[in-house]
Image (cartoon, rainbow, N blue to C red):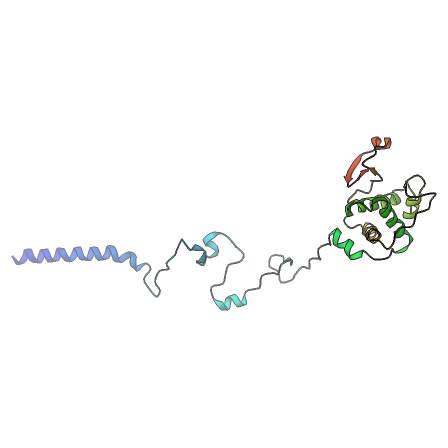
Length: 234
């Protein structure tokens, strides 16, 4: 009777060891100094993700320790361009003012000389009821003509040329209301056009007419653009 009991006890011991090995082995994989991390997939935005976890932000992995974070280079400020996180910073020029802002800044200035005065007069008499873009396009045609070699070489010469601008009588430019807001804007537009900022038309655009007329010469030219109440040709 003793031998069967010992055999049964031995068998029970072997079974218990097998059970402990089966359940105990995997637990040893994470047991140690710290318990296994518990990940909540419902609130995954709160979990710290490494570079390799998501495949995002390859160049901006967070340091593991606070002192490493303090030593890490600061992210470049908005509007500053860096090359491969180089130490040197490339200066980015300030953005160009919009046409509205530029005109607002320049409005109220007196013309810089006779040439700018003639150009402002063309803008004032030809397009003062137009948008700023429409006024700028008229100024560009005057400038294009003076540079074309086909018309007088000065802005005043272009404006005063016979049979070209209807507001000119016998080469005389009438006096504008220089206290008006329209004149102040015309001077600003003339200066913007001379500087070449916000250019609208190619340099070969030399003609335009109001959209309510249809001159025969327009059929022989290439229509370039329609801006406000004027159609422009090259």
